[in-house]
Length: 317
Image (cartoon, rainbow, N blue to C red):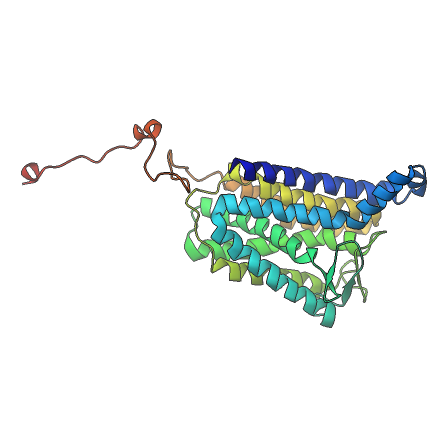
């Protein structure tokens, strides 16, 4: 398990660093060709490779980080029970969208995000749906459960909130990736909502709610409480990805785009922080079993477990 934690941390750091380098390349280097021209041939080649494959690297690292976190925290059944519907259904939604315009509007992917499935959708896109979708769902689920919600009420609330948090990311992602100076996809028709069609937002909400609903049928309550100190990874994943899109949007586009950015902050970032904070409100037991360990409390906890009084048959009579 220690090795998995080390890989998880390494991938998380790599994910964040990749986003930072991506920002630097998009906002500082590409607009100033003299910087690239001043590099030695090896540096120019390395920069070209980083810009061509940087999007693939940061998405892969994010997906690996969240996959390991899910396996460690909620178990392999919940991990696969969420990841498979998220990847399969989001890919189907994207293939349908790029082919017919439903449910996101008419759009097409450009280069920079890896090999395109059926020549339409980069293979990295379903992975991004998974790792951001899982992050928002588990934050919503843990926050609601800590407030005393139980069973299917928690799951339904997590689906609704998780889908809203996921869609809030798109308020900054789509302008940054489709309308900034160096786009990764393009809408074929100018949308009514800051260049995005309204059905793009409803498509995001519906796709997220769909795969989260399917995943909820496989979701089982983990043995170990998922509380605030264990949720910093999905919170960081959500915040750094939101920040990546927001920084590009507010620096590359005009002042009007402060409006969708502000909406994303109110509907996404603020609720995510509140859910993360709420997940620490539940009373955590002094001792609880950890998967793979004995179901009996250790010696240091035995003193905290009050034994039941023994009543003999004679005294009971």
